[in-house]
Image 1: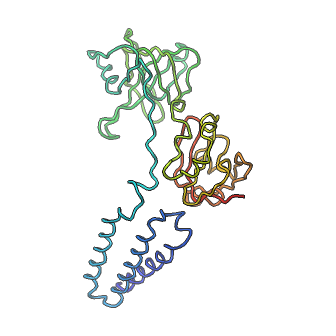
Image 2: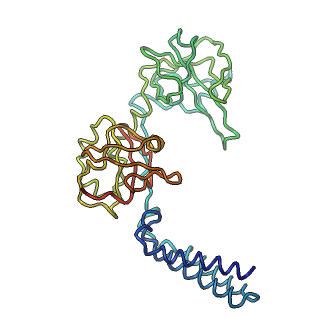
Image 3: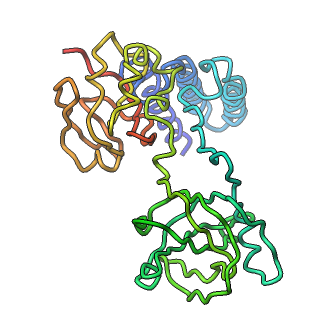
Length: 332
């Protein structure tokens, strides 16, 4: 058994040591960690040798090697690139309530279900998912749904509020921000209804919102140009016409990391239309703004375009989607 363990460690260590200097390493792992991978591989080989030569007395060696592994992990940060996470995205800016509208908090609305609880009326904004029915449509109303979670999923409570709208009603299951006036109404009967696999019974009977405006969630997101990570795709950003990109209708941007980006035409990396990773999996090819045809394949659940791997995808903005890729495809 000990010799089998030694053989397994030998294979693991040898493979890791061989893989560390390869060009493909940067496609799968941050290349700044090559040294850590190589050192770890050498330690695996030492462990393999210890088990093979002294199978009955290998435990002290194993403890020593595992201690060395632990030390490398513990002090690994000095070897990592600057910042807490080499490929971390900047946090998306959240849509702020418009001037004059106060946020209607979930807990506050949930208290309105209590006949004795009072909720401050006035100009409010609330976000949620739209539920419609034939009866509600005839009243030019819909119910806005949102969960209230105290601790975890087990504590989640689904609640809703009736919204009186003007003009065209939003689609069922769409996520919207409703700006309007929260006010008391004569208690109404709201039947229990099912939304997906959830049965909703907690809909406020005594309050409704008269909507001034209903904005889609996406319309309040930042422009696609702001979602390209400036710290890792600076060369690509420098070549972009940001004003043109911010005013584009719907585009998908494949932002290459600085590690492999040459001074190429940025239109080689932009496609008309908004494509999430799931959308890309269903396609065979796309054509960029420059006329380049990108071949798409899915390998082990990972999307690749002309050999470039999508490292971080589905950064959805107001007017498109950003996917960070590596390596950049070569200039034509």
